Length: 258
Image (cartoon, rainbow, N blue to C red; front, top):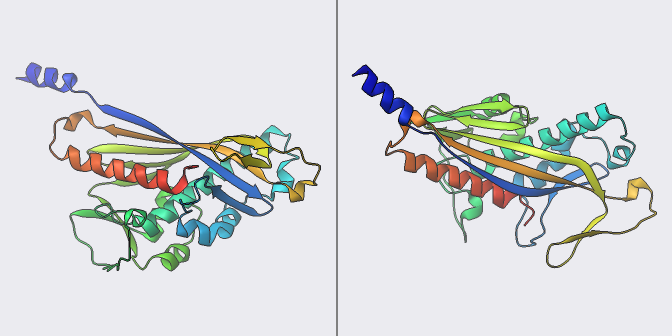
């Protein structure tokens, strides 16, 4: 029996899926924000409302100072701050637009819709307060910033889900699956990037002083879902797969270039 069980266990396979989202981060002066090439796609409300505060809390320097970053330590520090900025934008948008994993993100809802938010909790899900989601994720945000955008006082996740900060992003881990979201920023930025109608880019030769020029950072959001082999074949897998797909769609709609 022991040999049979061991054979079954080692025959199980974990399943992983990796997806990539391309993002452009615009930086001019003290302004840092995500750029959307498709004018019909909007920056998340939380990011648009709080972008100055988020970049300030992440201690991102004005763009005119970045041009002088030839020192490797300064460039590494800037990269870390930009990752922190992207992490904070995601957590703030999650708390505002996708705070209930069983519902649709607000961006997916069409037409005029009224929302009823109850702050009652139960033992069937994981409810993380705004303070906890900030602390566990490592986001540079305040509890007040999240409260100002959504009267829900928590983020509702599948039962047993733990939120953990990682070096380049965030991990959502529960007994069924693990979702890792990494923010990768290319510190070799472009000056005064412009876009053709088809979405391709070009730059303009400019003699303007650095304070009048804009910087674009190319970023990649790496989204990895791994289903635990111990629960291979579990009928609940379809529920967690749907949640993972919905979370990916939310991030893609909110932060991708298009």
